[in-house]
Image (cartoon, rainbow, N blue to C red; front, side):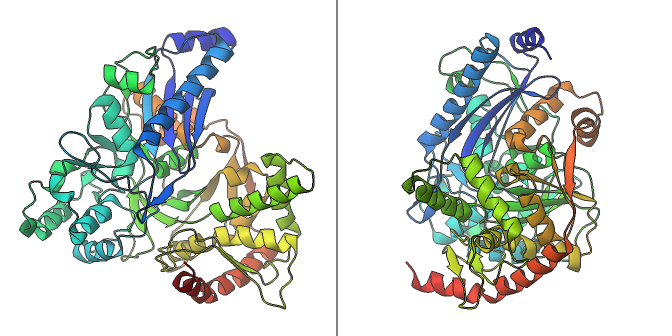
Length: 533
Protein backbone atom coordinates (compact mmCIF):
# COMPACT_ATOMS: atom_id res chain seq x y z
CA UNK A 1 0.00 0.00 0.00
CA UNK A 2 1.23 3.49 -0.79
CA UNK A 3 1.44 6.31 1.76
CA UNK A 4 -1.97 7.76 0.90
CA UNK A 5 -3.67 4.37 1.10
CA UNK A 6 -2.08 3.62 4.48
CA UNK A 7 -3.18 7.00 5.80
CA UNK A 8 -6.74 6.32 4.66
CA UNK A 9 -6.68 2.83 6.19
CA UNK A 10 -5.49 4.19 9.54
CA UNK A 11 -8.07 6.96 9.58
CA UNK A 12 -10.85 4.60 8.49
CA UNK A 13 -10.04 1.85 10.95
CA UNK A 14 -9.07 -0.64 8.25
CA UNK A 15 -6.27 -1.95 10.40
CA UNK A 16 -5.74 -4.62 13.05
CA UNK A 17 -3.77 -4.20 16.27
CA UNK A 18 -2.01 -7.00 18.12
CA UNK A 19 -0.27 -6.56 21.47
CA UNK A 20 1.70 -9.40 23.03
CA UNK A 21 3.24 -9.63 26.50
CA UNK A 22 6.36 -11.70 25.95
CA UNK A 23 8.76 -12.74 28.67
CA UNK A 24 11.25 -9.96 27.84
CA UNK A 25 9.25 -7.53 25.71
CA UNK A 26 5.75 -6.17 25.30
CA UNK A 27 5.19 -5.46 21.63
CA UNK A 28 2.40 -3.67 19.76
CA UNK A 29 1.97 -4.21 16.02
CA UNK A 30 -0.48 -2.45 13.68
CA UNK A 31 -1.12 -4.16 10.32
CA UNK A 32 -3.00 -3.15 7.20
CA UNK A 33 -5.45 -5.17 5.11
CA UNK A 34 -2.51 -6.78 3.30
CA UNK A 35 -1.25 -8.07 6.69
CA UNK A 36 1.86 -5.94 6.50
CA UNK A 37 3.19 -4.18 9.59
CA UNK A 38 2.70 -0.44 9.25
CA UNK A 39 3.71 0.59 12.77
CA UNK A 40 5.06 -0.96 15.96
CA UNK A 41 6.15 -0.16 19.48
CA UNK A 42 7.66 -2.07 22.36
CA UNK A 43 8.61 -2.06 26.03
CA UNK A 44 11.44 -4.11 27.49
CA UNK A 45 10.94 -5.86 30.82
CA UNK A 46 12.14 -8.82 32.88
CA UNK A 47 10.53 -11.07 35.44
CA UNK A 48 11.62 -10.83 39.06
CA UNK A 49 11.98 -13.52 41.71
CA UNK A 50 10.04 -12.23 44.72
CA UNK A 51 9.11 -14.22 47.81
CA UNK A 52 9.93 -17.43 45.98
CA UNK A 53 7.82 -16.70 42.87
CA UNK A 54 8.75 -15.46 39.41
CA UNK A 55 6.50 -12.48 38.75
CA UNK A 56 5.96 -9.16 36.98
CA UNK A 57 4.66 -6.24 39.01
CA UNK A 58 1.08 -5.26 38.26
CA UNK A 59 2.02 -1.61 37.82
CA UNK A 60 4.63 -2.56 35.23
CA UNK A 61 2.12 -4.74 33.39
CA UNK A 62 -0.10 -1.70 32.89
CA UNK A 63 2.75 0.77 32.42
CA UNK A 64 4.40 -1.49 29.86
CA UNK A 65 1.11 -1.89 27.97
CA UNK A 66 0.74 1.88 27.73
CA UNK A 67 4.39 2.38 26.78
CA UNK A 68 4.27 -0.14 23.93
CA UNK A 69 1.01 1.34 22.62
CA UNK A 70 2.32 4.90 22.94
CA UNK A 71 5.46 4.09 20.95
CA UNK A 72 3.39 2.41 18.24
CA UNK A 73 1.01 5.39 18.14
CA UNK A 74 3.98 7.76 17.82
CA UNK A 75 5.33 5.59 15.01
CA UNK A 76 2.01 6.05 13.18
CA UNK A 77 2.17 9.82 13.64
CA UNK A 78 5.80 10.09 12.53
CA UNK A 79 5.47 7.87 9.46
CA UNK A 80 2.06 8.90 8.16
CA UNK A 81 1.15 12.16 9.87
CA UNK A 82 -2.11 10.64 11.12
CA UNK A 83 -3.36 10.46 14.69
CA UNK A 84 -4.38 6.92 15.63
CA UNK A 85 -7.94 6.95 16.94
CA UNK A 86 -9.42 3.60 15.94
CA UNK A 87 -8.76 0.16 14.44
CA UNK A 88 -10.81 -2.56 12.82
CA UNK A 89 -9.98 -5.06 15.53
CA UNK A 90 -7.70 -5.54 18.52
CA UNK A 91 -6.27 -8.63 20.15
CA UNK A 92 -4.09 -9.30 23.17
CA UNK A 93 -1.80 -12.23 23.80
CA UNK A 94 0.69 -13.11 26.49
CA UNK A 95 2.84 -15.80 27.98
CA UNK A 96 0.65 -18.86 28.36
CA UNK A 97 -0.36 -20.33 31.70
CA UNK A 98 0.42 -18.74 35.01
CA UNK A 99 -1.98 -17.55 37.67
CA UNK A 100 -3.82 -14.29 38.26
CA UNK A 101 -6.53 -14.46 40.94
CA UNK A 102 -8.89 -11.59 41.75
CA UNK A 103 -11.52 -10.86 44.38
CA UNK A 104 -15.01 -9.43 43.78
CA UNK A 105 -13.62 -5.90 43.77
CA UNK A 106 -11.24 -6.79 40.96
CA UNK A 107 -8.19 -6.60 43.20
CA UNK A 108 -5.28 -8.93 42.55
CA UNK A 109 -5.13 -11.30 45.52
CA UNK A 110 -1.50 -12.44 45.10
CA UNK A 111 1.22 -11.22 42.72
CA UNK A 112 1.04 -12.69 39.21
CA UNK A 113 2.64 -16.16 39.23
CA UNK A 114 4.18 -16.80 35.82
CA UNK A 115 4.70 -19.94 33.77
CA UNK A 116 8.30 -20.01 34.97
CA UNK A 117 7.48 -21.10 38.52
CA UNK A 118 8.19 -24.72 39.37
CA UNK A 119 6.31 -24.54 42.67
CA UNK A 120 3.25 -26.61 41.83
CA UNK A 121 4.71 -30.10 41.60
CA UNK A 122 2.41 -31.69 44.18
CA UNK A 123 -0.70 -30.16 42.61
CA UNK A 124 0.33 -31.16 39.09
CA UNK A 125 0.93 -34.75 40.17
CA UNK A 126 -2.36 -35.05 42.05
CA UNK A 127 -4.43 -33.52 39.25
CA UNK A 128 -2.69 -35.65 36.61
CA UNK A 129 -3.60 -38.74 38.62
CA UNK A 130 -7.16 -37.53 39.21
CA UNK A 131 -7.87 -36.65 35.57
CA UNK A 132 -5.57 -39.22 33.92
CA UNK A 133 -4.53 -36.27 31.79
CA UNK A 134 -1.18 -34.50 31.99
CA UNK A 135 -1.40 -31.31 34.03
CA UNK A 136 1.90 -29.40 33.73
CA UNK A 137 3.21 -27.31 36.61
CA UNK A 138 2.78 -24.14 34.53
CA UNK A 139 -0.96 -24.47 34.07
CA UNK A 140 -3.34 -22.14 35.87
CA UNK A 141 -5.27 -25.02 37.41
CA UNK A 142 -2.04 -26.39 38.92
CA UNK A 143 -1.34 -23.00 40.51
CA UNK A 144 -4.88 -22.79 41.85
CA UNK A 145 -4.83 -26.31 43.28
CA UNK A 146 -1.38 -25.78 44.81
CA UNK A 147 -2.71 -22.68 46.57
CA UNK A 148 -5.51 -24.89 47.91
CA UNK A 149 -3.03 -27.55 49.06
CA UNK A 150 -0.92 -24.83 50.70
CA UNK A 151 -3.98 -23.51 52.53
CA UNK A 152 -3.29 -20.01 51.26
CA UNK A 153 -5.49 -17.32 52.77
CA UNK A 154 -6.56 -15.81 49.46
CA UNK A 155 -8.31 -18.88 48.05
CA UNK A 156 -11.76 -18.41 49.71
CA UNK A 157 -11.85 -14.84 48.35
CA UNK A 158 -11.33 -15.82 44.69
CA UNK A 159 -13.89 -14.42 42.27
CA UNK A 160 -11.95 -14.78 39.01
CA UNK A 161 -8.88 -16.71 37.83
CA UNK A 162 -7.33 -15.96 34.46
CA UNK A 163 -4.10 -15.63 32.49
CA UNK A 164 -2.18 -12.44 31.76
CA UNK A 165 -3.81 -12.11 28.33
CA UNK A 166 -7.23 -12.76 29.86
CA UNK A 167 -6.56 -10.09 32.48
CA UNK A 168 -5.69 -7.42 29.94
CA UNK A 169 -8.74 -8.34 27.84
CA UNK A 170 -10.96 -8.08 30.92
CA UNK A 171 -9.57 -4.66 31.82
CA UNK A 172 -10.24 -3.26 28.36
CA UNK A 173 -13.62 -4.86 27.65
CA UNK A 174 -15.12 -5.88 30.98
CA UNK A 175 -15.52 -9.38 29.48
CA UNK A 176 -14.26 -12.48 31.30
CA UNK A 177 -13.42 -14.40 28.13
CA UNK A 178 -10.41 -16.23 26.73
CA UNK A 179 -9.28 -17.84 23.49
CA UNK A 180 -9.33 -21.63 23.37
CA UNK A 181 -5.57 -21.90 22.88
CA UNK A 182 -4.87 -19.88 26.03
CA UNK A 183 -7.72 -21.69 27.82
CA UNK A 184 -6.02 -25.02 27.10
CA UNK A 185 -3.24 -23.84 29.42
CA UNK A 186 -5.79 -23.04 32.11
CA UNK A 187 -7.70 -26.36 32.24
CA UNK A 188 -8.06 -29.38 29.92
CA UNK A 189 -10.27 -28.78 26.88
CA UNK A 190 -12.77 -31.27 25.48
CA UNK A 191 -12.17 -31.40 21.72
CA UNK A 192 -15.81 -32.00 20.72
CA UNK A 193 -17.37 -29.19 22.78
CA UNK A 194 -14.43 -26.74 22.57
CA UNK A 195 -14.68 -25.83 26.24
CA UNK A 196 -13.36 -27.01 29.61
CA UNK A 197 -13.69 -30.78 29.92
CA UNK A 198 -16.97 -31.20 31.85
CA UNK A 199 -16.13 -34.54 33.50
CA UNK A 200 -12.82 -33.17 34.76
CA UNK A 201 -14.52 -29.99 36.00
CA UNK A 202 -16.84 -32.22 38.03
CA UNK A 203 -13.92 -34.21 39.39
CA UNK A 204 -12.15 -31.03 40.47
CA UNK A 205 -15.21 -29.58 42.20
CA UNK A 206 -15.81 -32.87 44.00
CA UNK A 207 -12.20 -33.01 45.16
CA UNK A 208 -12.46 -29.62 46.89
CA UNK A 209 -16.08 -29.88 48.05
CA UNK A 210 -15.06 -30.39 51.67
CA UNK A 211 -13.17 -27.08 51.74
CA UNK A 212 -16.37 -25.05 51.84
CA UNK A 213 -15.27 -22.45 49.31
CA UNK A 214 -18.06 -20.13 48.11
CA UNK A 215 -17.23 -20.85 44.45
CA UNK A 216 -17.12 -23.69 41.94
CA UNK A 217 -14.57 -23.95 39.16
CA UNK A 218 -16.71 -22.73 36.27
CA UNK A 219 -17.80 -19.74 38.35
CA UNK A 220 -14.22 -18.44 38.52
CA UNK A 221 -12.84 -19.34 35.08
CA UNK A 222 -13.23 -17.25 31.88
CA UNK A 223 -15.57 -18.28 29.07
CA UNK A 224 -13.84 -20.10 26.21
CA UNK A 225 -14.08 -18.78 22.62
CA UNK A 226 -12.53 -19.90 19.33
CA UNK A 227 -10.69 -17.78 16.79
CA UNK A 228 -13.00 -15.74 14.57
CA UNK A 229 -15.49 -15.04 17.34
CA UNK A 230 -15.88 -11.57 18.82
CA UNK A 231 -14.98 -11.42 22.50
CA UNK A 232 -16.22 -7.93 23.34
CA UNK A 233 -15.64 -4.30 22.50
CA UNK A 234 -13.28 -1.68 23.85
CA UNK A 235 -14.98 0.24 26.65
CA UNK A 236 -14.47 3.93 27.34
CA UNK A 237 -12.48 2.98 30.45
CA UNK A 238 -10.44 0.48 28.45
CA UNK A 239 -9.67 3.02 25.72
CA UNK A 240 -8.47 5.49 28.34
CA UNK A 241 -6.34 2.83 29.99
CA UNK A 242 -4.67 1.83 26.72
CA UNK A 243 -4.28 5.40 25.48
CA UNK A 244 -4.18 7.85 28.40
CA UNK A 245 -4.02 10.74 25.88
CA UNK A 246 -7.68 10.05 25.14
CA UNK A 247 -7.33 9.80 21.35
CA UNK A 248 -8.39 6.15 21.05
CA UNK A 249 -12.13 5.75 20.66
CA UNK A 250 -14.20 3.01 22.36
CA UNK A 251 -16.33 0.47 20.52
CA UNK A 252 -13.54 -1.36 18.67
CA UNK A 253 -14.13 -5.12 18.41
CA UNK A 254 -11.74 -7.40 20.30
CA UNK A 255 -10.99 -11.00 19.36
CA UNK A 256 -10.44 -13.71 22.01
CA UNK A 257 -7.18 -13.19 23.92
CA UNK A 258 -4.60 -15.86 23.21
CA UNK A 259 -1.38 -17.32 24.56
CA UNK A 260 1.96 -16.86 22.90
CA UNK A 261 1.94 -20.49 21.79
CA UNK A 262 -1.20 -19.83 19.75
CA UNK A 263 0.11 -16.64 18.20
CA UNK A 264 3.33 -18.49 17.34
CA UNK A 265 1.30 -21.07 15.42
CA UNK A 266 -0.55 -18.32 13.57
CA UNK A 267 2.60 -16.29 12.83
CA UNK A 268 4.24 -19.36 11.26
CA UNK A 269 1.17 -20.72 9.44
CA UNK A 270 1.31 -23.84 11.60
CA UNK A 271 -2.34 -24.52 12.45
CA UNK A 272 -2.98 -27.45 10.10
CA UNK A 273 -2.34 -31.08 10.98
CA UNK A 274 1.19 -32.51 10.57
CA UNK A 275 2.73 -29.04 10.84
CA UNK A 276 4.64 -27.59 13.75
CA UNK A 277 6.66 -24.67 14.95
CA UNK A 278 9.39 -24.04 17.47
CA UNK A 279 9.43 -20.76 19.37
CA UNK A 280 12.80 -19.76 20.77
CA UNK A 281 13.13 -17.19 23.54
CA UNK A 282 13.48 -17.19 27.32
CA UNK A 283 11.75 -20.55 27.10
CA UNK A 284 11.54 -22.83 24.07
CA UNK A 285 8.54 -24.80 22.95
CA UNK A 286 7.48 -26.93 20.02
CA UNK A 287 3.85 -27.12 18.94
CA UNK A 288 2.92 -30.08 16.74
CA UNK A 289 -0.66 -30.25 15.38
CA UNK A 290 -1.70 -33.88 15.77
CA UNK A 291 -3.63 -36.18 13.48
CA UNK A 292 -4.64 -38.48 16.33
CA UNK A 293 -4.61 -38.69 20.10
CA UNK A 294 -1.48 -39.95 21.80
CA UNK A 295 -1.56 -43.57 22.96
CA UNK A 296 -0.99 -42.70 26.60
CA UNK A 297 -0.29 -39.94 29.08
CA UNK A 298 3.19 -38.39 29.00
CA UNK A 299 4.16 -35.88 31.71
CA UNK A 300 6.58 -34.26 29.24
CA UNK A 301 3.85 -33.50 26.67
CA UNK A 302 1.20 -30.83 27.18
CA UNK A 303 -2.03 -31.37 25.29
CA UNK A 304 -3.25 -27.95 24.16
CA UNK A 305 -5.04 -26.58 21.10
CA UNK A 306 -4.65 -24.30 18.13
CA UNK A 307 -6.63 -21.03 18.29
CA UNK A 308 -9.39 -22.76 16.32
CA UNK A 309 -9.47 -25.80 18.60
CA UNK A 310 -7.40 -28.56 16.93
CA UNK A 311 -5.38 -30.79 19.32
CA UNK A 312 -1.70 -29.97 19.69
CA UNK A 313 1.17 -31.81 21.36
CA UNK A 314 3.30 -29.20 23.09
CA UNK A 315 6.84 -29.75 24.34
CA UNK A 316 7.78 -26.86 26.61
CA UNK A 317 11.18 -26.30 28.20
CA UNK A 318 11.45 -23.49 30.75
CA UNK A 319 15.00 -22.51 29.84
CA UNK A 320 16.46 -21.56 26.50
CA UNK A 321 18.20 -18.28 25.67
CA UNK A 322 18.62 -16.49 29.02
CA UNK A 323 22.01 -18.00 29.87
CA UNK A 324 23.22 -17.53 26.30
CA UNK A 325 22.20 -13.87 26.52
CA UNK A 326 24.10 -13.55 29.81
CA UNK A 327 27.27 -14.85 28.15
CA UNK A 328 26.72 -12.41 25.29
CA UNK A 329 26.59 -9.64 27.88
CA UNK A 330 29.92 -10.80 29.27
CA UNK A 331 31.50 -10.76 25.81
CA UNK A 332 30.06 -7.27 25.27
CA UNK A 333 31.74 -6.13 28.50
CA UNK A 334 35.04 -7.60 27.36
CA UNK A 335 34.78 -5.84 24.00
CA UNK A 336 34.07 -2.55 25.76
CA UNK A 337 37.04 -3.07 28.09
CA UNK A 338 39.20 -3.54 25.01
CA UNK A 339 37.90 -0.29 23.56
CA UNK A 340 35.35 -1.70 21.10
CA UNK A 341 31.65 -0.90 21.21
CA UNK A 342 29.87 -3.77 19.49
CA UNK A 343 26.18 -3.47 18.69
CA UNK A 344 24.01 -6.47 19.55
CA UNK A 345 23.44 -7.53 15.94
CA UNK A 346 27.15 -7.72 15.16
CA UNK A 347 28.00 -9.33 18.50
CA UNK A 348 25.44 -12.10 18.07
CA UNK A 349 26.33 -12.56 14.41
CA UNK A 350 30.05 -13.00 15.05
CA UNK A 351 29.73 -15.26 18.07
CA UNK A 352 26.89 -17.44 16.84
CA UNK A 353 28.61 -18.02 13.52
CA UNK A 354 31.65 -19.35 15.40
CA UNK A 355 29.47 -22.37 16.25
CA UNK A 356 29.62 -23.40 12.59
CA UNK A 357 33.41 -23.86 12.95
CA UNK A 358 33.12 -26.12 16.00
CA UNK A 359 33.62 -29.83 16.53
CA UNK A 360 30.34 -31.59 15.70
CA UNK A 361 29.63 -32.47 19.37
CA UNK A 362 30.96 -29.23 20.85
CA UNK A 363 34.35 -30.65 21.75
CA UNK A 364 33.31 -32.46 24.91
CA UNK A 365 31.99 -29.31 26.63
CA UNK A 366 28.78 -29.29 28.66
CA UNK A 367 26.41 -26.52 29.68
CA UNK A 368 23.02 -26.14 31.33
CA UNK A 369 21.27 -22.80 30.94
CA UNK A 370 18.90 -23.57 33.82
CA UNK A 371 17.92 -20.30 35.47
CA UNK A 372 14.79 -22.05 36.74
CA UNK A 373 13.59 -25.62 37.19
CA UNK A 374 13.02 -27.90 34.20
CA UNK A 375 10.10 -30.31 34.20
CA UNK A 376 11.31 -32.43 31.29
CA UNK A 377 14.55 -33.30 33.08
CA UNK A 378 13.04 -33.41 36.58
CA UNK A 379 14.83 -30.39 38.08
CA UNK A 380 12.71 -28.35 40.51
CA UNK A 381 15.26 -25.51 40.51
CA UNK A 382 18.04 -24.47 38.20
CA UNK A 383 21.63 -23.27 38.33
CA UNK A 384 23.33 -22.02 35.15
CA UNK A 385 26.30 -24.30 34.75
CA UNK A 386 29.27 -24.75 32.41
CA UNK A 387 31.46 -27.84 32.79
CA UNK A 388 34.42 -29.30 30.91
CA UNK A 389 36.89 -32.09 31.38
CA UNK A 390 40.67 -31.66 31.06
CA UNK A 391 40.51 -33.53 27.76
CA UNK A 392 37.81 -31.34 26.21
CA UNK A 393 38.60 -29.03 23.31
CA UNK A 394 37.98 -25.63 24.91
CA UNK A 395 37.66 -23.21 21.99
CA UNK A 396 35.34 -20.28 21.37
CA UNK A 397 33.66 -22.18 18.54
CA UNK A 398 32.96 -25.21 20.75
CA UNK A 399 31.84 -22.94 23.58
CA UNK A 400 29.24 -21.30 21.34
CA UNK A 401 28.03 -24.58 19.81
CA UNK A 402 27.62 -26.08 23.27
CA UNK A 403 25.45 -23.19 24.42
CA UNK A 404 23.30 -23.46 21.30
CA UNK A 405 23.00 -27.23 21.68
CA UNK A 406 22.06 -27.00 25.35
CA UNK A 407 19.37 -24.43 24.54
CA UNK A 408 17.60 -27.25 22.68
CA UNK A 409 18.57 -30.08 25.05
CA UNK A 410 15.39 -30.44 27.11
CA UNK A 411 13.26 -29.77 24.01
CA UNK A 412 14.98 -32.66 22.22
CA UNK A 413 14.17 -35.11 25.03
CA UNK A 414 10.50 -34.16 24.86
CA UNK A 415 10.31 -34.25 21.08
CA UNK A 416 11.76 -37.76 21.02
CA UNK A 417 8.59 -38.94 22.79
CA UNK A 418 6.44 -37.66 19.92
CA UNK A 419 8.63 -38.76 17.04
CA UNK A 420 10.06 -42.03 18.38
CA UNK A 421 7.54 -43.33 20.94
CA UNK A 422 4.38 -42.11 19.21
CA UNK A 423 5.59 -42.02 15.59
CA UNK A 424 3.98 -38.61 15.09
CA UNK A 425 4.27 -37.52 11.47
CA UNK A 426 5.60 -34.01 10.90
CA UNK A 427 5.65 -32.52 7.42
CA UNK A 428 7.29 -29.25 8.34
CA UNK A 429 8.62 -27.30 11.32
CA UNK A 430 9.02 -23.55 11.24
CA UNK A 431 11.29 -21.69 13.61
CA UNK A 432 10.69 -18.23 15.01
CA UNK A 433 12.22 -16.05 17.68
CA UNK A 434 15.21 -13.80 18.11
CA UNK A 435 17.78 -16.57 17.70
CA UNK A 436 16.83 -16.93 14.05
CA UNK A 437 17.64 -13.30 13.26
CA UNK A 438 21.19 -14.48 12.68
CA UNK A 439 20.90 -16.42 9.40
CA UNK A 440 21.59 -20.16 9.17
CA UNK A 441 23.09 -20.82 12.62
CA UNK A 442 19.98 -21.27 14.74
CA UNK A 443 18.23 -23.22 11.99
CA UNK A 444 21.18 -25.55 11.52
CA UNK A 445 21.53 -26.26 15.25
CA UNK A 446 17.80 -26.91 15.65
CA UNK A 447 17.78 -29.14 12.56
CA UNK A 448 20.63 -31.12 14.14
CA UNK A 449 18.73 -31.46 17.40
CA UNK A 450 15.40 -32.56 15.92
CA UNK A 451 16.78 -34.23 12.76
CA UNK A 452 14.11 -32.61 10.59
CA UNK A 453 14.27 -29.71 8.10
CA UNK A 454 13.71 -26.33 9.74
CA UNK A 455 12.21 -23.43 7.83
CA UNK A 456 12.26 -19.75 8.69
CA UNK A 457 9.91 -17.53 6.74
CA UNK A 458 10.61 -13.94 5.79
CA UNK A 459 7.90 -12.99 8.29
CA UNK A 460 9.59 -14.89 11.19
CA UNK A 461 10.86 -11.71 12.79
CA UNK A 462 7.32 -10.34 13.06
CA UNK A 463 6.60 -12.52 16.07
CA UNK A 464 3.59 -13.13 18.25
CA UNK A 465 2.21 -9.59 18.27
CA UNK A 466 1.90 -9.83 14.49
CA UNK A 467 0.24 -13.23 14.90
CA UNK A 468 -2.22 -11.66 17.33
CA UNK A 469 -2.96 -8.89 14.84
CA UNK A 470 -3.68 -11.61 12.25
CA UNK A 471 -6.21 -13.16 14.62
CA UNK A 472 -7.86 -9.76 15.02
CA UNK A 473 -7.95 -9.44 11.23
CA UNK A 474 -9.40 -12.95 10.90
CA UNK A 475 -12.23 -11.94 13.23
CA UNK A 476 -13.15 -8.86 11.20
CA UNK A 477 -12.24 -9.83 7.62
CA UNK A 478 -12.88 -13.55 7.17
CA UNK A 479 -15.49 -14.76 4.76
CA UNK A 480 -18.53 -16.66 6.02
CA UNK A 481 -17.46 -20.14 7.04
CA UNK A 482 -13.81 -19.52 6.23
CA UNK A 483 -11.47 -21.57 8.41
CA UNK A 484 -8.39 -20.15 10.07
CA UNK A 485 -6.26 -22.61 8.11
CA UNK A 486 -7.66 -21.30 4.80
CA UNK A 487 -7.39 -17.65 5.84
CA UNK A 488 -3.72 -18.06 6.72
CA UNK A 489 -2.71 -20.37 3.90
CA UNK A 490 -4.54 -18.65 1.03
CA UNK A 491 -4.50 -15.01 2.11
CA UNK A 492 -1.73 -14.25 4.59
CA UNK A 493 1.07 -16.62 3.60
CA UNK A 494 0.32 -17.53 0.01
CA UNK A 495 3.23 -15.54 -1.40
CA UNK A 496 5.53 -15.46 1.64
CA UNK A 497 9.03 -16.76 0.98
CA UNK A 498 10.89 -19.07 3.33
CA UNK A 499 14.34 -20.57 3.77
CA UNK A 500 14.61 -24.27 4.65
CA UNK A 501 17.72 -25.94 6.06
CA UNK A 502 17.94 -29.72 6.16
CA UNK A 503 19.86 -31.58 8.88
CA UNK A 504 23.57 -32.03 8.26
CA UNK A 505 24.59 -35.64 8.99
CA UNK A 506 27.69 -34.58 10.91
CA UNK A 507 25.71 -32.10 13.01
CA UNK A 508 23.05 -34.73 13.77
CA UNK A 509 25.65 -37.24 14.93
CA UNK A 510 27.39 -34.51 16.94
CA UNK A 511 24.18 -33.56 18.68
CA UNK A 512 23.48 -37.23 19.43
CA UNK A 513 26.84 -37.42 21.20
CA UNK A 514 26.15 -34.15 23.02
CA UNK A 515 22.70 -35.16 24.24
CA UNK A 516 24.14 -38.35 25.75
CA UNK A 517 26.62 -36.18 27.66
CA UNK A 518 23.76 -33.83 28.59
CA UNK A 519 21.67 -36.64 30.08
CA UNK A 520 24.62 -38.16 31.93
CA UNK A 521 25.53 -34.78 33.38
CA UNK A 522 22.12 -34.02 34.89
CA UNK A 523 23.45 -35.33 38.20
CA UNK A 524 25.99 -32.49 38.13
CA UNK A 525 23.18 -29.97 37.63
CA UNK A 526 21.23 -31.51 40.51
CA UNK A 527 24.31 -31.31 42.73
CA UNK A 528 24.66 -27.62 41.86
CA UNK A 529 21.03 -27.08 42.89
CA UNK A 530 21.62 -28.98 46.14
CA UNK A 531 24.82 -27.22 47.12
CA UNK A 532 24.90 -23.79 45.45
CA UNK A 533 22.60 -21.20 47.01
